Image (tube, rainbow, N blue to C red; front, side, top):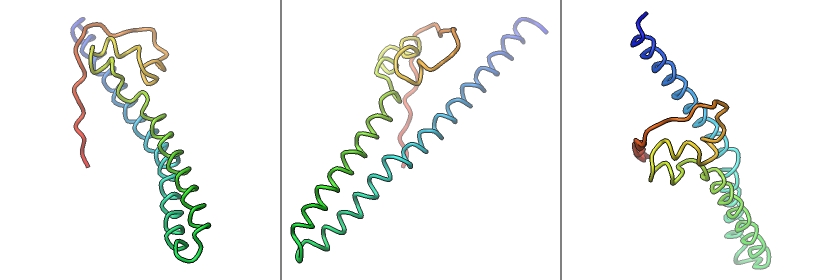
Length: 129
């Protein structure tokens, strides 16, 4: 096998590992959003319905429910912020992969000692609904 073919094979293997790691990270993020923030939002929604029901007949209970819903929303927002903290490190967008490699929890978790070289920027992900 020539050196070029070995390098090409290694490049394909590395790409496959990167894609696999990216998919695993997306699944982890989906689970965390579902199990954390989404549950807080669903709970807040239910509490708001209860507050709406109690508004005319028991204003004290309605106020307590509103305070509880506010706490649930604050908890949900805190979880979303915590999850978002390393998804798109600013250094990656501004300075490219080499700089972004060492910033943010997703990049620091690598157990490999290799570091990328170059300054090519990662393409922007499109947001779809």
